[in-house]
Length: 297
Length: 297
Image (cartoon, rainbow over all chains, first blue to last red; front, side, top):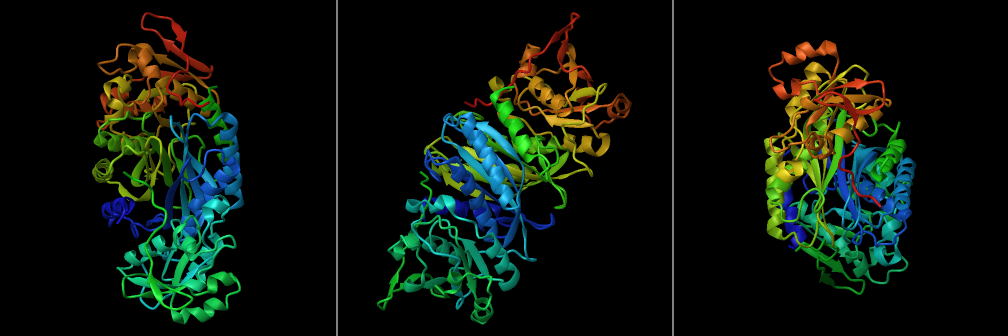
């Protein structure tokens, strides 16, 4: 387990059983307040976006990265709070553009911007949202619901998000997440932010230490991606990864509201721990759980 | 108006009328979710605490700074989410201590830590909470309710918070905020984070452009503070500033649950805009609205 993985486990231990539904899930559930789902994610300048990235793209990513976490719970986004910590290079015109762009992004997603805070820093900008959503069904969809025999699906093509700039321009799968939660009820769902291998590994561990086999030829890749390794390890795809029982597949495939790419079965959950890749040319290899992890000392 | 003041005005304009109760208030109100109050505040290393500050004090300030905003609305805190952005100097043992200390602080305040996120940064640490509370009465107490003739009160002594280290050790006035909201219903309340003069000025502007006279000898000062200027301009006091009508004073003064210092009338709201200080030796001088403001370029 990496440094970040160890810290996340520590945090999940601390948070467990304290009003949280599924510590370590994409969003936290606050019971009895209309069953509100909450998530909180920062963009750090130099980590989540390079210095010099257009403010419009920064505002877009900031909102959609947070909405993606809500989509992964099948929640409809309602409101955000924003905490902006600006470094010395952020001049007034850039700050003003960020406020205006974020307000536009919120409006286009039907999200109310209800509060937040403003601070200065001697270092890089840190732009943090807390996003609130309402579950679209009585129970939000956790990461931890995988069982052996389930089929794995992904909402869109993967890989190459950083070099292509897609990590700045993706659209959170809000409508798809709600549709899945309302109609198809996947047993488990999350968004792929750190790479298919790493995030699927987290899902399998959260489900009690299961394993999975992925089918090499069925993992959807972006046109500019030539290796399945990119899909497994690049991260920042923000596509939904979810699991259905065999018995759910027919109704799911007949749903015209689901894009064709999401109907492909890319793998299968198994009782045997570990991740395996079934190669096109035959045979199966073990997959290392690589992906983006924050460098903690 | 300063750079920060101008940015805050811009943000209030953008947020106005979009589901927010009182943009620019200490916390935002999410209607119809059990009327939840939300606030979000960061601690930036090198700004809100110095490098080398003990992790225990950082964890304490992080929680109480956010709870103070809820107290200022008369809300009872319920839950937090935490987003930790760690710079390279934060080693594993420090991070672990921060998690454990924050969990302890939450437990001692009856607050559930329900979620959050973990990231790395090449710069200083930025530790951000989103805190959620329930209003202790049907309507939370805004900043904007001042009217001419009202009496101003403050919950405790002011000044010298930074040199004394009190800015790290203060206790958010949670019980007092709830008591005020439940029993005495001040027309307006906020917490003093940037200095009495600056924060009172904000309250007066939010209330439609009123003014006030403060009584020099009645402003409570900490023992290590020798000038009223410290109380006016130092900031980081995290005491509650609130306003009562003359007709409320008797019942308020008879309430044994209110500390004596809070019963002193430190000033009076007036229709004439601007801040004035009535000197002990007689006469009145105009007060400049100075206090802590973030340095934005």
